[in-house]
Image: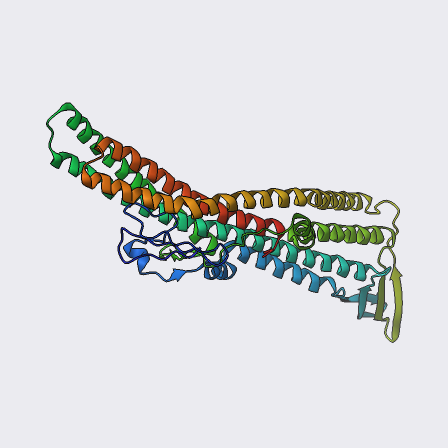
Length: 434
């Protein structure tokens, strides 16, 4: 929804985005903020206004969580590079001192050893490392999915908190105005005294609500700053999202199919199972087909005697066949397969819940947009006229204003719930279905 703020701080005009249709209920009276524009503090007003798209881009660039995921991916790629490297040869050199009757000779000798991988061990190791890279890539994509969802929630939460803050401020100003009017009206009876006392108490409560709304807005701003990686001293200003969610959610069958194909956490679990199976296969091969070591040597002995030869060293897999290590890896692979199976059963339920939440939130918001906002504007105008004409007592005004402020809060809550439901649908499916 894209709200337009009128020139006066006491009036606001609302226009729904094309995705939700259009509505123009007219001039809103003092206290109505509903889903109006964000009114920022002086410090925040100097900041560059963030759109939702810009906030998502900032998070992709500066999010600490994504930075950790990127570094982990670099480490996995390093392991893949290392997996394809051949083992280094071992060069040994020395000298032998021979005591021969009549002479003492020191003869040099040198040998070169190389361990040879057999049975396709190198290929198995490279294959497991590739699955490891794939797993980490999917895990990074899953972190990105979670970060995007948190940015959407935090962004909408800050927009709603700013709206609630302005609503509370308008309510505090209106309560103070009524309290002054009650005193200026004069206290000639007990009824006048009750009116004055209750209006003053209402003003105190409204001031407290305004301060609480300021604190909530600060918390919402900190939440968004943390998720997008903003510096501690950077002021944040946000603009209401201009990409209104579609009125009709996707079909559940299609959404489930897309989620099972797109969810990176499911893909990561499957890749982890393949990696562990590959590691287990490699361990099995190494334990039963050990790598031989080929050695060549040269030595010069006893004057003119030269020795050149070679050896093959083969470990005998009699006691240690890596059975325990293989069993551990097979167990971990089974656990990864069980996790993938769990996600395959859970994802359809999550999609069903998210779509149900979205449908209910859309119905509630659309009803507020079509009915509540115009009715509340009309009620405020009528209440102000009756108060001006002296046809309504102060107590009744206080009661009606409290009801209208509660309704304003309900409108903001409905807007926020719809935005959070939209984020939930995108997060659950793994991509935007719209």
